[in-house]
Length: 421
Image (cartoon, rainbow, N blue to C red; front, side):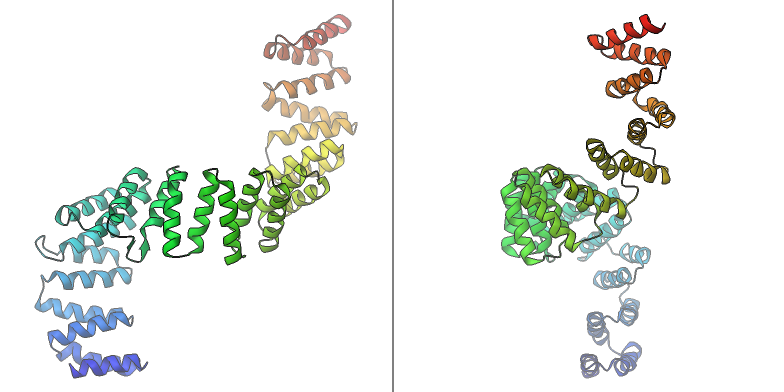
């Protein structure tokens, strides 16, 4: 073993080349014990191929030794050789003490390949051998969670928590909280987030806690936790949108707007922050700021339909029809087929007295809005103004079918018929 100790010392001192030269002697002429001990040490230092060669040499002497096969399979997995790892693990006998561990590794490999049913079979087989082994329950929880089988995942994690709060370095309370939240049981998830944070304050867990509190309707808790997260890491960009949403639900619009502005300062390429900021600005009566924010959202994404439509609503209210057409032109440039853009264009052209253009847009929009009374009413009155009485009559007949109790439509249709037809 002196030779092995010398190699380990060389590795610890960073003399890797000399250590590997000496390793070759152990590979060729070392005892089984020396090869096993050195292989484990080489694994710790990341020399996977060298460790693999030693285990393969040992397997020549002990071809059915489960522990060696498991160690070799783990190396194959680390090297990215999943298929080779499966072949190695399948060599382990069912009565070998290492067989349950092999089943866990096989389950993990099949899960990575998306073969969830096979993975579950391997885990349940391991569970039948070791019914009280919490690592298996945890693995089942992970599998069920990935599959979206939330109730099964919850049961599996709850079994783990009977004895362990941490498995393989993973906080099981956090896992259970995440799956409860994913299943829609937001309020039930909150105590488990609290326990997870008591064990270790971790910013992603804190974000999940705050976001789940928001989804559960506990806005004040969400505000508190998002602000706590901001103090820990002000560059955690995702928090600002949701912090603003929390404030808005509490009708603290100035705080919501300030949160968005802070978020924009941290993440100036996030179109959603600009858009949401624009909507908040409108609620606060800050139309100019809102328009500016919507324009910046469109600058980041010229095909951002929701921002374009909202901006056009503001321009329509302000009677800024040329600005409306600027947005329409931008959308048309990217072949945006949003029907509302056609309607916006029709209205803008009508107010700018470009009637032929307005008619063209109304006719195109009609395809999409023929069951929409507000559109048909605007279109019908426009046709009357343009002297297109027959077309207008058809529109008002359609309106009457949609709303027979509306006397105004009947009166207009009668007037058209009496005066022109």
